[in-house]
Image (cartoon, rainbow, N blue to C red; front, side, top):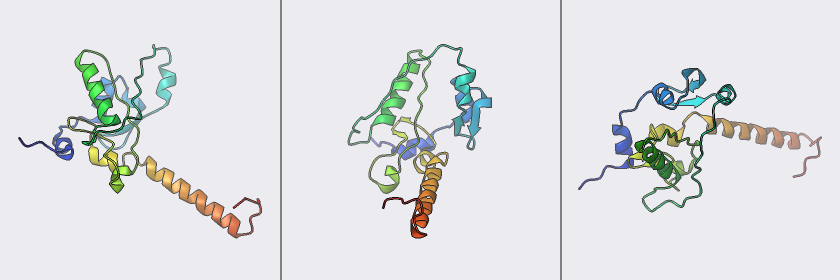
Length: 160
């Protein structure tokens, strides 16, 4: 029996527009900051605007050591969400932006695995919404400013 790889499964997926996924989760399009057709951030104002609604429940999946096949936190989260929805619960998985581990070949991707993954896999593992690039640029700018300040005489007496 031939098994499909994670990337083959992800690329064969018939993705739905993020606006449709958000609507299923009860998120109005007005709260979406879209990054193309399939990705978006949810505006933080939504929490304040919907504060009168009852709180949901949170299941936090963290610190799982992945199996040799790579099933870890994301795969568990997506599989759990799929299972809850299958039994009629209103469930949504919220994933964080991944580390750069997959880029350097030191860990699995951060999109899950098999049929329990988030798509578009390539975007999620390499760029997503660009936040990691912004963090890196800000870090480099601050480091350059600090180095320059010290080189120019260190008027603030920064300890090196």
